[in-house]
Length: 419
Image (cartoon, rainbow, N blue to C red):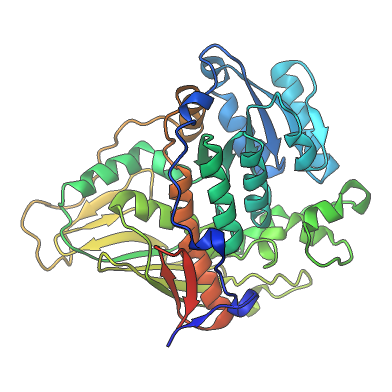
């Protein structure tokens, strides 16, 4: 017998927005495209490591061919804002407006687009607000960590009709596009299992720990409505490891894997998920991180296969990423150079001999794809629908982890429930 979820551990995830069927992208999208000769004016929401070193540097390599400028920066930490502004001054010869809150940035009517690289908890709020402000958007994954917030943000994007690219950039790699085209030929036969073990010797959130002074941070802006608590530098800088702000490796790393699987196989939404995890004794210390660092989630898909995502962030051995079929297997462990073979496949038919490298298929860089789509009004490679499709499974996994129950998803009603 099914039991509907209540807030946090057993949260009923319904309501008018969630019950509605998915909206189609507005017909106004193409009309809202930026003119061919107009300079695109971009604002950055979140100016930390990801915002500066991935987003800003990622788009800047295309500045000459796409004609844009970065005009505003929003981040609760003064040091991040000023560091990002240093890049703007170097590249464009002038300062960007520096904002503590994304709200101030979105008030600017002259901004065409925003890039969201805030902490995972904030993604849906920033996405929804940017959509309601009529901005084109590039948003980091995971698209959301709470289901009602995710549905509301996705619907806001559909209503706005603006161009949104989700930051699951692996699907734009020529090697992965090639893997998708190879999969379409049916060479692997019937798929039984898709598996990822992405392990490390140490949780990735330790990499982000920094010295941060309380007077340099708008702590309430960062808490974003969560209960107040004393400022801690290791919570602010190491938020990836704190469950309230992130949810850990299944949403953060597993979102890439789920999106990769969706892109290559064309799978729909999972029907159910179970997930177990723990905080290994290896990394219990003064930081008191609360995200599970050893965890495994398994989903059932209506296409008839199981999908498993596992992380051991206390031992780096055993990494793998494969799609198993009855005629062959696709190995994506090195997603820059995926390979395939027929080892262990019960219905191998001679069409695969030995281990072969996947032939890449040319595709625009993920950032360039977004910039080009703002001009043309075309749908980006990782559309809002693709983002919703990866976010639902990872939220299912974490609801299972929280409740200790199996989570089921109804795609027609857009609801989650326990069984």
